[in-house]
Image 1 (cartoon, chains in turn yellow, purple, orange, green):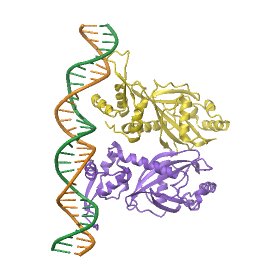
Image 2 (cartoon, each protein chain N blue to C red):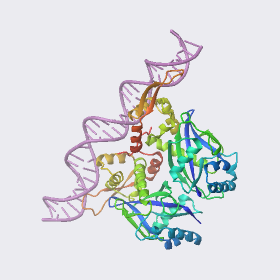
Image 3 (tube, protein in one colour):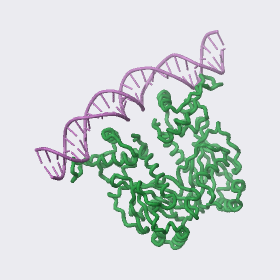
Image 4 (cartoon, rainbow over the protein chains, first blue to last red):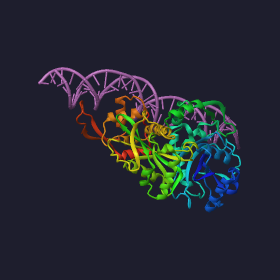
Length: 248
Length: 248
DNA sequence: TAGCTTATTGTACATTATACACAAATAATT
DNA sequence: AATTATTTGTGTATAATGTACAATAAGCTA
């Protein structure tokens, strides 16, 4: 059984072409059947789709998410959605807010527990979703028309990320395993939406002890090749717990 | 109608006798009737109580909260609960996490959207709850036996508060309108669970520009009377938005 | 090898953090 | 009125961190 009044939505952020991107889908009831293997869940789900034409429309994109089954833990289910919709697992995923205005979904009372995830689309291989008609990246400032309050949820997630990045080392999840300091700086600039001074940025980030010099360099770039760094998982975990100060 | 699968719980923190306190209640179905005026809601609510003997027990305390009615916005309803259970309104209240393990409530699938509130019990006048058999403050380290996962929720709330207090000026809500610097320091010491240096603490807090000298002093104290301060709502709002740095 | 492009680095100055101890104010007691 | 007990209130030197600012190095291409 699914809980008709509760859904789980994931705002999946990616960092591509020096822009923050969001992964959206066009869910379809027929395809969801593969996910909601239990026939009863599927029938219930179908009924929900039938009541909301927007959900069946080809024109509307929405956040990746579904109704919560009775038998799944909330956090586990968020991971499961991510896995099934994108093939990704073991990625940064965090519950950030539950949206529950009574009119957020027409004709139905649905609360959604929203999570945000951070990945690097170039590094992670997205598998074709088995439950959506279509899944696609959109630049955060070029979003299509979205169903329900998806847009609001996305921008709340962005606000949360913007806060988070100042106090915890989460930004790294948006980068490939090996990255340059310029990439890192650009990432922070994009998230915080402000220009940062290169020398001071480097001084600060290097003083954290979070960066490991891989002794590798970029290749095939038409300019001086930048050094590649990775981040130290031990220090990362420590800073994640203790907090850090990245108000720049 | 109420949503059987969704409840709203409030972790109400108070600062009393230099200790963090939590307000808990013993809810009772018969009394809830006054709150859930719609008969159908009450009947549904009663059924829920009947299924869970712990909810009817005299021995178990729990977080202040009820099931979410179909016709209320989530955030509004949290405020409403607070108002009805304590007589308080316009106080600091913030959603912090939704708890949704499948086994958190026996025999039923209930998610709870948890909020935390900050008040000063000496300053605010708690009205007798019209919907609970009993409402009482407990020191955070002397909690009674609690129903379901209330204890976990309380400690998650405390963790959230501990984080929050480092970056936003929320702590002030726990103090009376006029407070001494010693009270403020003790509050931070209790929340952060560490000793702070008086001179440095005062220097830091005064540099924020958040404090207004009321030109009043304590009276009837058997020692040098401390100056009373209030906090500047304008600066407060600004710092709340911008964030601040109180990692001490 | 010249020229283009981006990466890398240092320093002076200002601000903030930290460590640390004693005098001032008040009520209670003698 | 003097003394005592208790808590408030304050300053300074040093270390660490933040800020403003621009020249040189490296890799590729033509």
